[in-house]
Image (cartoon, rainbow, N blue to C red; front, side, top):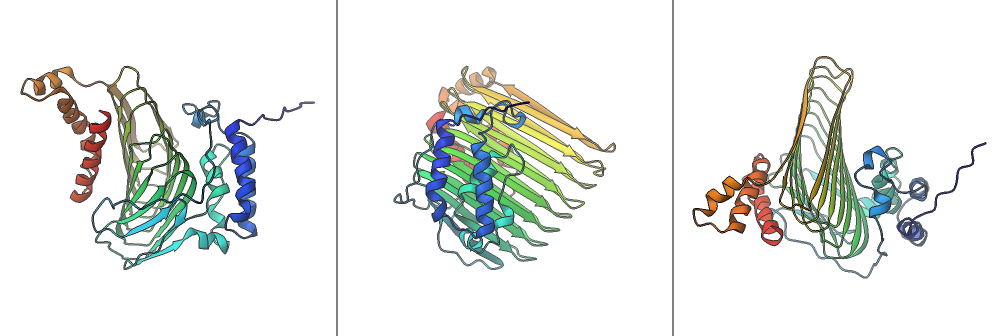
Length: 421
């Protein structure tokens, strides 16, 4: 007979379990939603992932998550200026959705409404035993935005969704159902000012023939823990570009899960991770090429300073039916400190025999010959280093076709280096 010893929960796990008991009566949802919440908290009671779980090998969450702040309804978060001036903005301020804005072809509904009537229940729950972010968010999510974009809509300006925290715990959802033949850009801001635990889950369905760009700009303070998960399903002949910039947070895990559902679909991922101080940032991607004639390119650029630790795990699964898949992945890291670390784990799992797939990873330091060249022309060392870092990162930013977006992101890069470089 095998007797399994009950797990001894960590202080962070116990704090989450206690918070669930205190919050349950305040969370929106019908009976089915509450069943999903109960199942999610049971997953947390079973223990957060450790390095023994393959997908969490470089981010031992049981060890790294040492404290959990309490919910505080009295805190007031304020919206931030949009990334692109004049963009319509949908806010979630300390976990509560603000007022909807009117955009032609776009319907925005607070997630709290969909939880309350039970129509969002199917979207809750963990995607497997290792889905700690899905479980955490399903247990506590209270609000967010559901966007529905009508067929043929062409957005002249990006629509911006903001998740702004002022401390405590904030758990939100952003979902989008994007119709056929849509051209749109969505900017997602994750930021705040407090000692917070934030989880945010996105579910995005992209219709046939659409061309969609989605930007995630994560700039949490050094006192915050941020867990993000982005799920997308791409339709026939659709092109989807996801750009992720991580430039803050004490402990950060951003998961990306994408499935090519229609032939001719194309996925582009561009990532910039700016790591400083004694922080830990993990970007983990799983991409499924599930049908024939699809393509993807993933390029990640990382800058590491101080004692920061970074992780990129990227797995591309090419299903047996997915012939003529063209998939490439590259992760490039610039170490600016002897104490910084970055771990990279690219993977290809291919079951088709007529594909063009590859991956690569590099880690390097600033080229001292280049640094000397700039300093010899009267440029001080910090400015010269900043120019070289910007050149390293700007290459992927400039692939965005919108000049206003490029300028806005490069300005944030300049601001980050001025403070941390």
